[in-house]
Image (cartoon, rainbow, N blue to C red):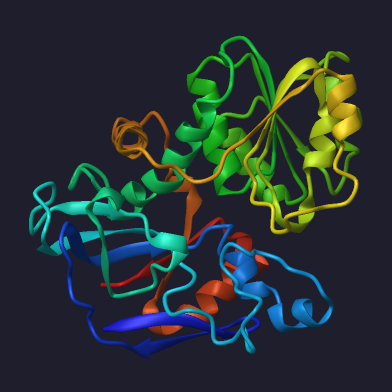
Length: 338
């Protein structure tokens, strides 16, 4: 079967690998649609050998810096949003022919046929909407999981830092849960335009306007009851969140932080404002993904504006470049395994 692996900085290739044995309580499904996520970008973009030489360690959850050489990376890294049809099953929960969502271990999901423990396979509806739309149940499920950590959203002023696919879907969920005001912030104007389409009441292009000044303007100086950091990585927008949040407010750090320790984390400002800070990564409960698929099927969250690009497997290098570089107004970049 075909598999992908990152063989160097900004270089991904397809290789042939054998099918593994399927173990007890495991399920194998053929991936039909997959897409790239913001957490895949640094694994493609960063030069990890250079970071190692400089004594820095990023993405240590995926990278073993004790190895002599960090490339090629493990086969299957990095892809983790995928749906397809079960072809073999040693599980009572899932039958051959079922349409499912799979969540790979440590993002090693770039395989034509993916074999996973039954608890990492989730049933998905088939035929109601496109497979590409149902695929968005994975990132939407992580949002629903993370939002459990927040207080009641109804009537609240919320700032969403980052209007990539995650931030855009957050706009829709916040709108559906009755947020009074949803302010989306991003340095890319095409994203802020979609932000309004997906539920934001106000948007700020931070490449043009001072975001703190505009947040104060939009909220008449009150600032935000809730700030969601949905940018992550090298952006370190958690620092902005500390300025946007009101006294006694809440911050949800959702964007992936690549480094274990960062300078200038605004602990003092959070303390002075008596802010509750929550962190959320991934999702672990079937109900989150199943509920996400229901919201997509019922039209509560319209994910179609996110599905901007699709590439065949033999165009995988172009797919990663398009997503990582945000080329051609890219939002979600899909890989078509069919």
